[in-house]
Image (cartoon, rainbow, N blue to C red; front, side):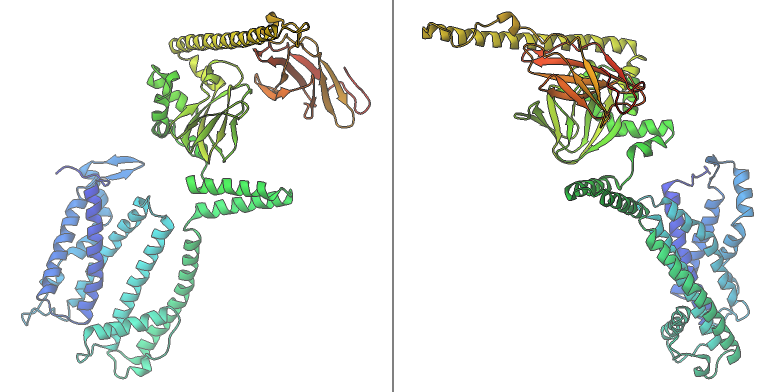
Amino acid sequence: MKIISPDNKYRILWEFFVLLITILATILSPLIVVFNMPLKGLILAMDIFITFVFATDIFLNFNTGYEKRRKMITDRKKLTKRYLKGWFIPDLLATIPFSLIFFSVHGLIITRMFRFFRLTRLFKLLSANKTLRKSSELSNKINPSFIRMILLIFWILIFAHMVAIIWVAMVGVNPDIPIKDQYLKALYWTITTITTIGYGDISPLSLGITAVPANVITTFTIIIELLGAGMYGFIIGNISNLIANLDVAKSQHQEKVERINTFLKYKNLPGNIQKRVNNYYDYLWESRRGYNEAQVIKELPISLKEIVSLQINKEIMEKVPLFKGASQTFLKEVILNLEPVVFTPEDYIIRGGEIGYEMYFISRGSVTVLSADENITYATLNEGQFFGEMALLLSMPRTATVKASDYCDLYLLHKDTFNSILLKYPSFAKKIEELADKRRAENETKIQESQEEKLQEHKIEEAELEEIGDNEPQNPPMDYPDLLKVPQRISQLQISVLDDDNYLKLRWKSIKNTYHYQILKKIPHSDKWKLLNPRILTPEYLDMHPVMDDKNIYRIRGVNQNGSGEWSSPFLFSLDSVDFPGNDKE
């Protein structure tokens, strides 16, 4: 016979079936022995059936493999040796049909000497305990604490049943009272004694004539009361602990939220901000039970990390035109480097005019795409869509603003990460470079068309002025070449230190034909630049957060209707040599 895997679903179902039969035998066998029930009819049929099930289970145990250090053992000699040293003896004793072997010829009544051999069925309950433990391991959809509580109640009921049977045996069976009434009365006494209630309506003195001396029953009662007192405390403590641990994740989440609320109150933050923070954590709990997705995936081995990440993100990645034609290994590496982020309603994900360094994929929620001035709504993107892919190709200002319409789960891909992956795939990198050149040419064409349209508008306006026929023009002559120019490059910058606040004030020469200015600051110890302000109307800027122990490096450019001018050369200023207060440096 082929060795059966312990994880085979039919083998698992069989084990639970044997468990149910074992519980049935545990309940019936003591009742049959104590009440001396005749072995005939339904009882005889059930006894034969139980014997057959237990014998079949022994046969299957000899042919079922087991795991050792996560390795499946299928060697038959090892299986036999392990089972013989383990549960074979209890299983064999529980299987032997002593009730069929030792009976008298008088109505198939078990002889008084051998009727207690029926209790060997209870040995099966010992081996069935491993099935109970396995049930808690298999229940990945049920809280383990709840399973432990069920098992605790099960063993308490089994214990109560056995004590009630012993009580009936000591008191003696009254043939004039139905069996069920006698058992129910004994179970009632057991429960009241174990739970330390003890009404006193049933006691050794109130029983009269018993099968054993009253002192023996009194001693038994004292023992049960002591066990009951200890068990009562044990049960209450365990149940309290189990209830407290029914949802450990929820408890940890609530504890975290309490700490955050304490911090918010300590800082006297406005109520609307506190509400937004609490709503954010409520969303985290409702959507992902408070877990950190990045941390969960990080803790997985690389093989499982790939499987889980691909299962979550592969479908959306294949929709991106930018990745069309990419190999599966390339997509896999991109997916493994995605960073999960969450945005709350009305959060700015992208601001028009900012330099883009990230691309986003929508896992859950929706976002609204607006014009840079937020006056025009371009589109609404939903689950499975993406935006910001141009940031991976060109280092240019964002042309639109994107805001979260509701709570959004997004995945973020950084430009630096994308470029580092491209280095490993030169053929696809060349394709990306060609696509970037194509997009750059398209953008330049659009800018040129826009400039030509504006030039044409100015020509029309001038023609209309000429038709008026006034001696003097209402507007100065139009300098057409300037209309096609972007602002000149800024070449000089003055930086001064404001002593009182340790701020840096930046000033530069105003550039002709400039609507506003933009300023970048280099992030310390990084190759990235941070956009400090996308719209500065005057040629000056106050940096309220200068780097005190490192260099402050800035770049500035002008912006007009024709587009953005060139970024200035880096302007460097260090505060290391400045003595505060009283030392200005320009």
